[in-house]
Amino acid sequence: MNKATKVLAMLAAACCCATVAAAEYVPLPGGLFESVLPQGPVSTVSVPVEVAPFALRAMPVTVGEYLRFVEAHPQWQRQRVAAIFADRRYLFDWPTALQPPSATSRDSPVVNVSWFAAKAYCESEGARLPSWLQWEYAAAADETRRDARSDPAWRRRILAWYERPGGAALAPVGGAPNAYGVRDLHGLVWEWVDDFNALFIAGDSRTQGDPDLLKFCGSGALSIVDRDSYAVLMRIALLSSLNAADTTSNLGFRCARPIDRNTP
Image (cartoon, rainbow, N blue to C red; front, side, top):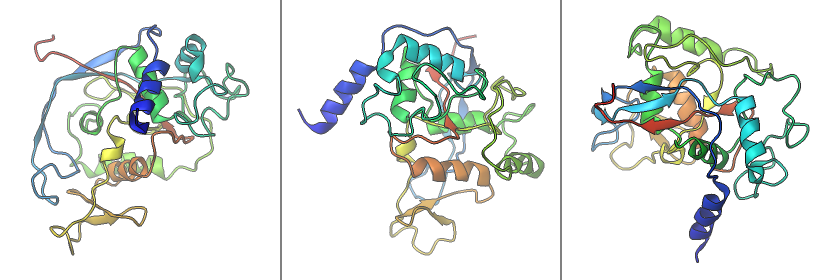
């Protein structure tokens, strides 16, 4: 058995069969969507792609929900999780394995969780992490429009979050819903996506000298279509720099489920 097969086998064993308490999922209709990342045959050209209908958790997974998860599945408690699935900062701010920080509301989004842990949690709900396209599609909406990305005022409002000083306790989830009924996609935490490690696009001969290349981590180039989507690009930069076992104090997650296009 090779290393990759062993990791998959361990992850399957660590993922659980029992489910946690039911969460609210909201349906998104899908349709043609133009991503900030190039989707066409040439790495500097994007074409609209079809996003299938899906359901997305209305809010990020909270501290209280994650506590119930690790209570039911001790293999994901801080002292027991395999090192291959989470780094040393995994839930590091919890005083004990079953005690979240007292200064943090149980309704705040859980952070300091790895991609492996987020994936296991979503599987416990019969779901999975959303793809980048699904997250970007949902996050393009404001309170009344399904795609507000061309509005400079809306962009400035999102960017204002990145200007706030860090270190403060996270607020509870439950911000204003966007046009789909999804909350807290901006302004609270960054979020894992299922295909985070596919967001990094290396430059090649087709993109040499292109002004729309952003250099990340000094090891390659990310070709972008819309240079003004700074808030989204900052998320791409963060996610593309991570490994699946990494954790950070501002990175949480939510889950997604497929739905039939005929679902009401």
